[in-house]
Image (tube, rainbow, N blue to C red; front, side, top):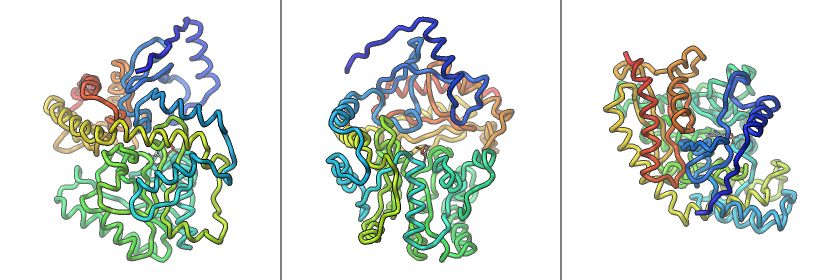
Length: 452
Ligand code: PMP
């Protein structure tokens, strides 16, 4: 392992760093005053180090994107090599890295998903997926799940069902329709009835909206930031059938669940389906460089053989991002990271089930591989959440204490409503999982006191 030159900062330097951040920069999804965001100087493997040299174990891989772990010098070198050759060229030009990456992704993706349109991030990927679906079908409506997240730009925020969008901007883009997918945890009538209800509900929504108006159904490969909500068993297969019946395109958003996070290349591969489009970002470059990709079928791409493809971004197919992605994809294979995600996912399941005996506030742990979250409840019988979905600040009092304890004990992870995410980098070891879960266990002890 390479050694990192650790810098030592004076008190004045640290104060200046904090001052400049708080004075001149806006922080996403936070109120701007009275906050104390983690400061990070450098990172290695599953650990982040702050300006005081304190170590924080990263249990959400940044925002579930740093799948290969932090500080991998192979990516740094690949990026430097590409930058020395050509750091930018317009998207209408060819480069070796662009072609090689397209070929590699076509090999990874199933079926006829062989054409890559490179984007900048998750949001720009899904925006383009929506556009392609509308162009391809000549229809205008997009159906999405209530409890889902597809990005924060105007169109994708409207497509997602994340409640923050309503408080932030109630003027939604038109022609997005939402449907519900009930989940097993709060469904009292058994799995078979759950699947039936979910499918009937979707069919009713389609009938009301008019199938001839619906361009695409947009779903996460595996649910992520809405709480790793499991699909009813067999649900995505039924959705695939419904799409085929009505000529609706199935767009699967693998921005979070892609690239080994769930123990397979893509989350949808747990459900035995092949979508018409796959949205990728995050794990594609493991967050080393912002990047995204929309993979479409040959049939969809063929429409533009003789017609101009009306998609474009100045930084599409950025050569440096392509070089980073190619190296990251190779690292997944060389370091057997996807296999490790399967093993470590099982280890986490085992360990959390032991924790559950000790902590009455743990309602459920839901995961697929290393995309997981612990849901805290006030009461296991009623399943009343420790903080409600889309909680107001006053309702977050207990969860805020839990989050503060997690931070104090040296962990960074994503805590949202009553969910604590367990999604470390795929290179994580059992010792590191033990260390992280021990911190979470100490923090959850606070929530236990509020169980009634
Ligand atoms: N889709 C999914 C499933 C996501 O989880 C996210 C980000 N969390 C996005 C899209 C948006 O990605 P970005 O923040 O890179 O725009």
